[in-house]
Length: 468
Image (cartoon, rainbow, N blue to C red; front, side):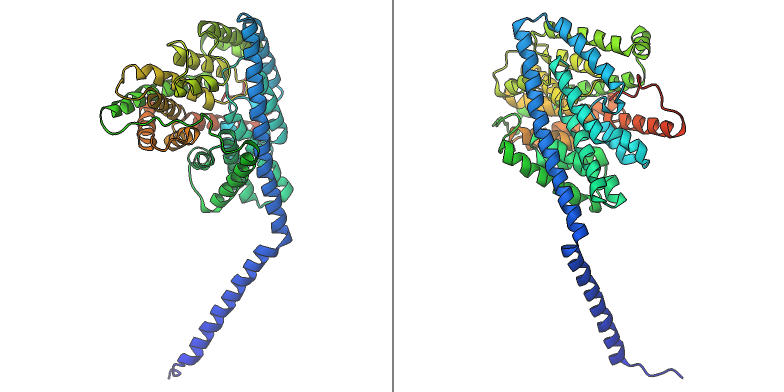
């Protein structure tokens, strides 16, 4: 016969269990607030984010100085790049043979570092030695006239710093694998452009391709700390200044379709060619890459100098000044500037020298937008230039949200949100018809494959690692 039910005893037991649970949660909260170990980790992490911002600022100043130095040389004699650019490119290619992890933009290496688990392999992609070499060789590339940017390298530099911070703070492995590397890359892009929202979006959309609750707080914290540090030093500036260019609904929206299609095709073609070049270059040039990479770098440098002469010395460097002048309506550039800048950037990248594609892509897009503005007289030219920028960037990286957020934040123009969004989405769709695999994803997979081969076999010839 069953014992009679005793509701009072059961209720008391339930209340006691809930009280114990509340006490346990309270104890955990107290431990979270006062634990010396956790506070040490926080201080090291915040210090790492500040270090990322400080490095990004110094890198930006150095890049501006290197770019200005080269343009001073060109102003003295437009023929000097025929000597300086091939020599400088050959020197950088020679140096990358000893630190192959610095080649290319750095974003594929960061994505690959998130995918691999072997600490030795990750150390070949991220580290303070990599960061120092990346900064130095990128500055040399800019000083000799290569068509490269600093924003992509800043992502790898930021991830390298936070990766090193993970070792100092003894963070859990899960945080080291995802949170710290993602946070370092996001902080790097945010500090490079002074666009904190773009840094967060870029980490989610491009580097991680997912959003995990356990890493979101880490990314946000790093971006906030790096953003505050950058704001304290540089002030609340916008990368391309402020533009009020806008247009309403109506005929002007034809420019959205035109820029989306043209920019998407051009960006997709650029990515497709770069991916093909990273695999192999056909013919005698391909043989030259394999057997004489330094001579190949010099040949590409000479080609860059010829392109520079044909463009009136406008295709060298990041393209920041040219893009800003186009947006402000003060540019005096050749009609073919966008196309020539695209070719110059492609030639720079097939050598495998360190450098990013963000700033050159924005310049190329602005040039294409300026061309298309002639066919859309019912839309403001500055607005069409912005659409060209977001279209080409979205076509290259196939990350539409990142593309329109970066352009929106860089120009402090929220009136163009809907046109920029529509153009970025259209350009990405068109780009995928030409280049089926996103550029960074494809290059990152090649780095992962190379990393796997490194674990199984002796290191391959460092003269021909995957280009990025």
